[in-house]
Image (tube, rainbow, N blue to C red; front, side):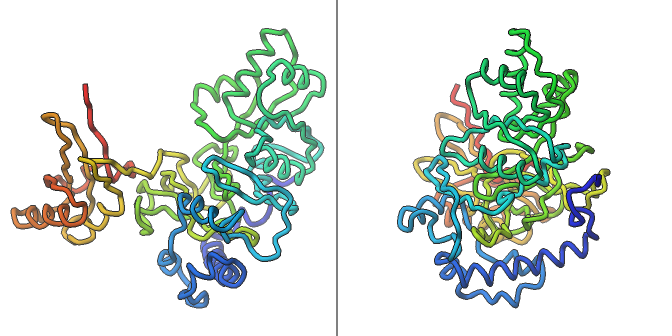
Length: 410
């Protein structure tokens, strides 16, 4: 049996990149033709002109926050669903935001991550994601069944029943959050029940600290994690190498400077932007709001797609200062107005019982004139006065932070 889900995972990286660029161009053409929302958003975009990563980076961003407003006026999916979509489910996530589930096999593409975690046809999976409104339970069930696994739709809660069911049916795998798996194992130990049939797990939805993973390993359970969203399905997943998360083959992923659509250099922390290649729900340059970074090199497991470092925080760094909101987009406008700068970070502090703004600027061209010009830009763009502090190039942290709220009111 192959170590890989399919041949896509071991493609030559250059061939993959070119194929994905063409796939994005085709998706843009499809979305313009078949969705009400993108017919408007992309009306001035010629899909045939998309031949490079730089061309993709010029496409407009779709933000999650926009979905709520779009869906209010065009139920259920804001016009982002394609004509002729065959619905199996309509999910409801907080917001509310509604997401489609279709009758297609492995519609959320989790089968690839399950396979990498050791799930195989004939296995029995104990699925502890919620089946109530939100999509995780049915998404993972659909993908596990696509691999040939039987699924116990356990959902959340009812810990004693969870333990009894595992002891009776002896599933070989677990799907859910790591914290709930830990609760089940502790309850089984307290009850004296045998749940050792589970020897593998795919977890997502929360952090998996090394100590928790090690605790599972001591109990004979190999735990792998993936990164996903209700809107996009699988984004990236872990392999046996456990060195970063490998980007899924069904998406095009970029890392951009928070508050913009501008890609950052490899290794730099920024916001995860995903173009889904799903024709039923073709989200194009969808801003996840999550921070991550692309890792150097390829995974030792043999998969050749890009790897990301996993979830590194949230990109939404809006701050309210002196009654005014400041957004990362405004900070980026200040930055772009002054080509002498290589990187900036706006720090909001609390001094003398008042909000203070300081724009820390990396540059090797510091001068009083530049300081004055940047101060004027802050006032014009952010509508607030702020100080400018020049710092050495490379001295600002690589953590994706554009606005640092350092206010301490104690």
